[in-house]
Amino acid sequence: MFSNSHIGIDLGTANTLVYTKGKGLLIDEPTVVAVNTKTREIVAFGEEAKKMIGKTPTSIEVIRPLQDGVIADFDITTQLLKLIMQKAGKKLGTSLRKPTVIVCTPSGATSVERRAIQDAVRQSGAKDVQLMEEPVAAAIGAGLPVDEPVASMIVDIGGGTTEVGIISFGGVVASHTVKAAGDRMDEAIIHFVRKEYNVIIGEATAENIKMTIGHALVPHAVEQMQATGRDVVSGLPKTIHLSSTQIQGVLSESLETILEAIRATLETCPPELAGDIVDHGVILTGGGALLKDISEWLTQVIEVPVHLAPEPLQSVVIGTGKSFFVSDRKQKLAK
Image (cartoon, rainbow, N blue to C red; front, side, top):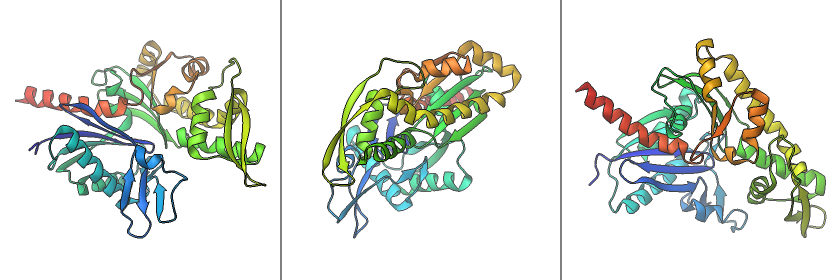
């Protein structure tokens, strides 16, 4: 009954993905839960819960149990993981009993934060829990030669954090983690709209604005869009008109913070590996890597080629799945 199942989990601030050794990507759901305020039990999770944001009665609260890449609510996260395991079992056509799980953690996470993630996964029913640093998983998922004595640089722009890492011989040589990522960009858009137009918009609207007319800091043809929110003064619905140049200015602070993290990581890179990065470039992964013109902008400012990973949203969880095959191969060679 799959007692020795192998599962890779990318427990992200914005999305949770599950990968199995035999079936590939099984689950890709927003890390959002709807909770009964009296019993503290989850009534919905994933896409279903995300659709409920801002639309629930007082008896139900929609929350995100992870903030800035780490667990903010341990009990709810454990419940969520149990539900995800059950859903994965249904998709496999069987129940998952005591699987071996590889779960990704930010490279800058403290020992307490790592232990919290490990305990939450174990309490959800895992037999063995192994932690893997996100930059390494993202690099493996992007197809980079992480086991070779060649430097691979990865920039994983997620929901809560941006992970910058230089990988060589299967380990992190240098890394930086900053909390400037997708969520921070959405918050900046919400703050700008309220300050500029006296209109309150929700997270989903802000994310849509970012994805539709958001651009990195390069010249571009101006784009326009409408957004609807609630007028602060009258309390009535109000439609506003936004331009891509406005949003570009709003996103500049977060983008500059990401740039500083990349520069700081490059500065701590051993000279012997710097040439590899110039030759092979930098790989972008994560949802934030889909921001328009970000590859072009980074290429200009750091003067190193920057490329988008083949599957930027799934690179981390694919890396956990590939790591199973790598470990299996090593065990066979050892025998």
